[in-house]
Length: 201
Image 1 (spheres, rainbow, N blue to C red):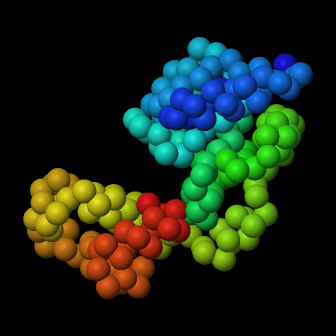
Image 2: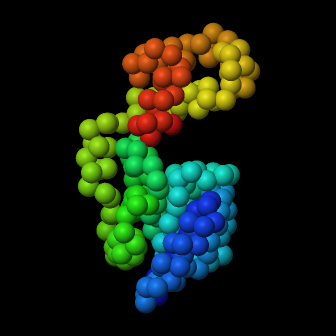
Image 3: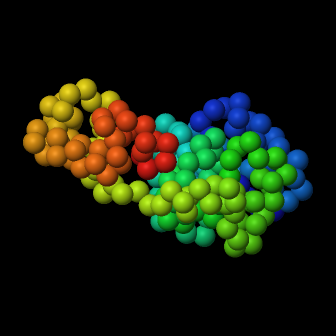
């Protein structure tokens, strides 16, 4: 039997996926969690062959959980299952060792097949999403710039942003200017939108 850990913050969706996988003769869901920061602990206890991870979860994103899980249990295959088909998310997931990246609107039979393929050592990626990821390219932002832009979503003024990140006012302003230049944005709101749409944030 293929042992599966399921991480999805919406209980109804999580239950539906678990029920669908329960119909497969060779797949068993051995753990279910609703938070990203519960993934590694649950995996250490249940020892799954495959972890199905949503991206948007409280505590830790599925992408960060995938990286942590890959480090803690490298033999566990990770398949990202998400509503968000953003090229940058795909690139980050694959860079962090994910075996697959699937959209939630895929047929249930494809999910079961993807789990089997992941266990067999294959990589599973939606062809259209793979093409989009190649055409979009890597994020031009440095890790620090990504941190600044992520904080800019919740901090109001440049002074508040600088304070939240323990930066000088001038350094925070310089980071924002560099981010907007790299993304071809006229404002930080536009820069945030561009980065989110491309999965760079």
